[in-house]
Structure formats: C-alpha cells, structure tokens
Length: 169
Image (tube, rainbow, N blue to C red; front, side, top):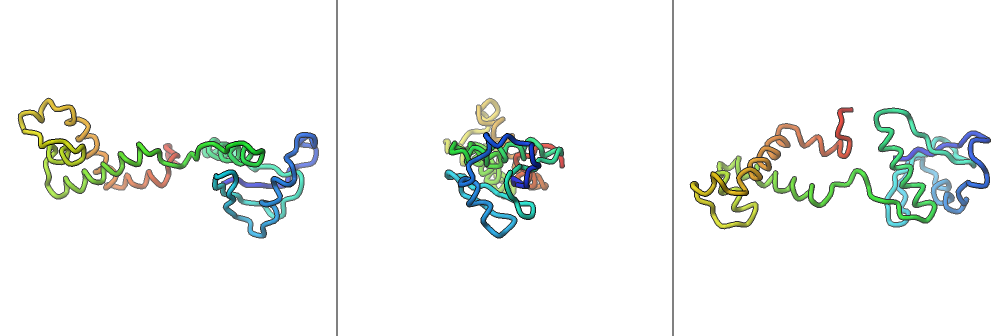
C-alpha cells in the first residue's frame, strides 16, 4: 500500500511535478483507502487526510521499507505513463505449481501412499519398481516436495501470507 500525503513546501521543484490530471482520479475519491487500476495494474492507495499539491509519498524507515519503496515506484511509473512492473507479492507460476504438487503429495502420503506411488502420480510416469526407486531421478525431488507439504501442514502455510516478506516481522 502506498501512502500519499501533502508534501512540504519547497521539497520538490515545481518544474518536475507530475501532471495534475494523472493524480486527479486518485485525489478526488472520498475514501482514504482505495484500489486504483492504472495501466492494467491494481495499486492500493492510502491518503493521509486531505492531500493537496504538492503530493508526496510517505515511506517509514522500517523493515518493510524496500517493499513500500517498490510499491511507490510502481505507482509513480503508472502515473507517468510507464508500465508499472511486476507485483512483488504475486507468486510465480512455478512456485504456485510447486505448492500444488506439495499439497497433492501430502494428501497421498496421509493416505499412506508410498513415495514411488506418489512420484508416479505427480510426475505422470509409469509405476517405479522398488529396485529402480533407489537410484531413480525423481526420488530426491519427490522427497523434497513431500517435506514441503508436511512443512506447510505444520503451519508453514502462514509463510504464504507473508510472501514476499521472507524475514520474520
């Protein structure tokens, strides 16, 4: 979320201010918190009281500073007619796919399926014999995915709520 406030006089050079029309759609809404759709990106905005010219972004110096600064930069890019850039909080398709596999593997393991059986289902392969499983290429990968599923089950799913904030808050 980007917090907009009224900037102190003399802080910004008036020659470099954003066009008032680009800010008008944000500043004319009555609510303090809003979701704005700019150039195909949804941006969360919070306004401190009544915001007049010049407009500034409030960035507290805390442990989320880098995330807040990236969100402010996305807003600035959208307001200046540029592509806002990627959403930091979005899971990549690869990560989402891995989490789905982990939950499917967890379901299988909780139903007492063996690791080779789980691997055959997850990776759409032929059943793997016990003898071949010892040196099979999917053995380690299946183990990691099952461990991820169990980790998520033991409250690791909460990490998804903090994505992309990897560190403890």
